[in-house]
Length: 469
Image 1 (cartoon, helix red, strand yellow):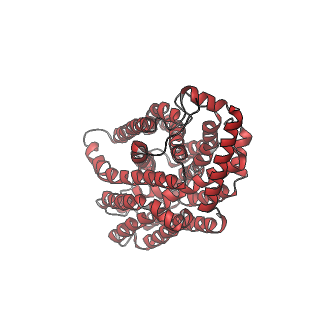
Image 2: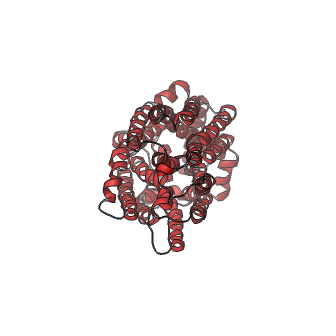
Image 3: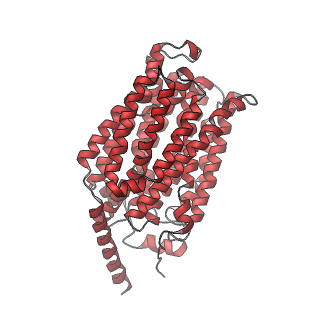
């Protein structure tokens, strides 16, 4: 019997995004604290940190297209094309993430362990994250469903910041009173990654019935329409001008903003008032949660593209403002950063919706279901940004005269200025370029996507009828 997907409803509609909640908690540990852990806690040499982390992120960036291609091209396993990876890869994420935050043996050996585990943890997370992201297209039946699910994901992601702000940041000092500094970050890595694994399993449960499994999955994978090769995957990219526009713009933005998430920890250690750190994260997350919840409606009202442009240019303006006030007024900077999350909350869900539109275009253009690759391709700019972070953060710190042995209170203006450049100035430049590229180059609108989806449905219905005749 042919597999028939039910309409989006119930627990899948309301709980989709819980793994993104957990993923964000874990990613914040890496983004905020990995570089700080390596420089100030493990006290490893800057040159070694740059080499180990940049190599790890370079390998991961190269692998992004391969990982997404595997999900698209490999025949579905017994639990489905996407849900199988969500079920099976969670434990691997835990093991590799914990070892990333470890100080084992000599400096050289510690750097080797950190770098190799950083590569492996990003690889295993990419399989789960991409598969989860591709469920947007699996669960959705139309553009409105995609916008709703993208908004759900962003809402859960933003909400995690509220928990992170006061459940993680203030408790680091408390944990340091009962265990060595290095073990504090290892413990946090374990707790957050184990929680992510559990939430992946929740997503596996709530999406039961929406993706072909067992014999139906095997039959679907064996059908000519679903057999996907390397050429099909390449076509879905090179014949998709809209996807290329997004990727080029996102790549530029990620390169310029590579050091921003690491810079926040240095900021509150060397410039800002430490007690404002959790408050800033909490307020930003609260505002971002509300903004993300309504992002789908904003996209429906003004179009997903215009919503992304609004969010992008709004964040740029806030970053520029923060670059002027971050040193003299910590409180004003917190207020502006909180307001920035209004734009960030609008931007994220609608950007995912644009990728969903690109996936529809790819299927319409090639006749192949390569949405896992198209949706997963958005990690490529992110990973290249992470790759550059491994180089950029140590480089800017070195140029600024950073020395971990010097107390933060004695840090000079050059160090502080370097941190502000990473935190605000470079992301503002990259975001402005990205917005201009998207404004001028992305021409796919909602009406055309609906027409293509209708043509796809009619074409595949005809193929099914012909196959059964």
